[in-house]
Length: 325
Image (cartoon, rainbow, N blue to C red; front, side, top):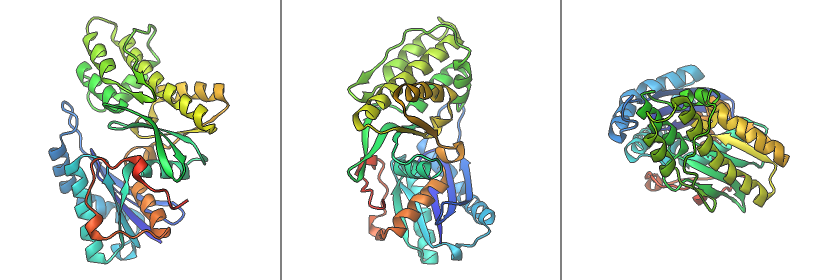
């Protein structure tokens, strides 16, 4: 059995193909970038339209399959940027209609979690999901992925990239700031905003931007990243204590950060927990995770009429019934 998944929530248009054991046969993608302005939804959607056919051809060639071999098609139904989501949904509907495949819209965030659990030894973790648009601390409770804490304004990845643009570091700036983290020597005080179990990053970003040109740039990068990640770690530690789980799984684009890994390693050592970091190719937005989510939901018996395949920009992680367990 083969599943084809389409990812188009933001800057990436990706198509992945997996089998029933989550062997990834293809994971092709094209990414929209703009060095000065981040993601412009309409321009990103135009990019996805222009590159969609090529990405599909690459994926099928890589998998050495044709569309007639595909058993189910899935697409990221949300959350994400409306124009980008619609490109993926329209592509999926077209392919489903043409080749008579079952069609499933899946939750982008849940797909990150499920492929992360498949590609690591994690079984029942607290998930630290950090990306450009999303920052959530998640755990499976009573048949749903409960969001124990989340950002109330912007994702930590967007914080790093926005700050990096102000420094002229280009996009994505996160990897450069991550390198500078280990070069910093002095922690500059910056706003630390944890509200209950939720996170607010806007004040931290604004204050850091105000200090550009007034403080050492390396120390400022170190301080911004350390403060942001300390906030994330605090909420993750509280979730571990509350649930008594013994694993942390890190996914999303920011999962590649060595600084975040080093801070979470110390947290896990202190709490007797295990840390698992999703491999970069599956932690970032990609079609394989959408394909795998479609596979497990299809095998569990889910069916979705075309009339219910409208995209949902605010499709929450905790709206999904985890019925496939």
